[in-house]
Length: 112
Length: 113
Image (tube, rainbow over all chains, first blue to last red; front, top):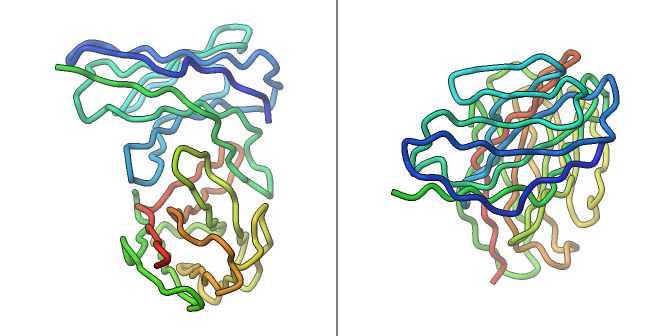
C-alpha cells in the first residue's frame, strides 16, 4: 500500500467547509484512496473512497488530482460532531488479504 | 457502525481468565476482521477470516483465538496467554469486489484488573 502524508491537526469553524488534504505521491494505478474517521472511543467510520474521479456521497466529497498524487476530503458544512481523527488510506482493492493500515491521521477540531 | 454489533461495550476481566468478545454482522459479508487499538496508536490486525470455517493469523495473533462457524459471527477469545490484553478491540467486515470496503463495529473496551 502506498504511503500517505496528512497534516497532524486542523481547525474548522462550525458551518464552514472542512478541507482535509492527503498526499500519496507513490500511489499505483490500481490503488484506491479511502477515507475513514474515528471519533473518540468509537470504531472507525467509513466515509468515502475513489480511484481517479471525484466522488460525492451524503457525508463528504473526495477530490483527487489528475496525477492522483494527492486528494482532498471535503466536509461541506462541518458540525461539532465532525470532530474526529480523519485517516487517508491508499490500497489496492479486491485483494484477498484486505488488511487496513491506519497512519497517524489528521485531528480535525470543529469549534463553535 | 453499519450492520455490525459488538458486545459487550465494556468488559472487565481478572488476570488469568479467558474472555470472549462477540461480533455479529448482518451485511452478508464473507470477510471479517479483528483489530486491536491501544491508546494513541493505530489498529493492529489480530485475526481475519475470508470465509466460513476458515481464518488466518494477523500480525499479533499470540494469546488470541477465533472461530468462524457462521457467516454472521466471528467471536474473539482473549486467553490468559495474552500478556497485555487491556485494549480497545474492533471487529470489521468487508465487502467484496474491486473497491472493497471495511465497515467497523462500535468496539469493546477490555480492561484486565
